[in-house]
Length: 70
View 1 (cartoon, rainbow, N blue to C red):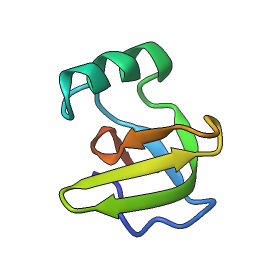
View 2 (cartoon, rainbow, N blue to C red):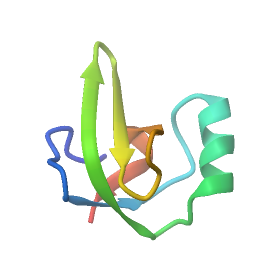
View 3 (spheres, one colour):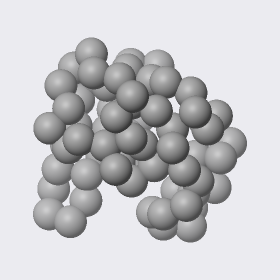
View 4 (cartoon, helix red, strand yellow):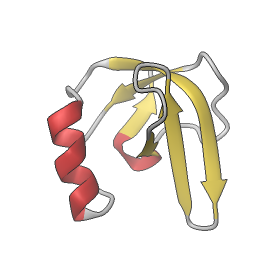
């Protein structure tokens, strides 16, 4: 799992298609490539959920469970 305290500019890698909710896994497999590196814009933690916003996909948030620190 990626660092939930990641800062803007930190790098994460798409590490898995498993985890999250079923619709999230499906969308992730259509959008991302395993092993590809992306740039963090910000991380938002609310309750039991954490979302990462990536510079490569402005305006969208992704479940952090799919990423690891690069």
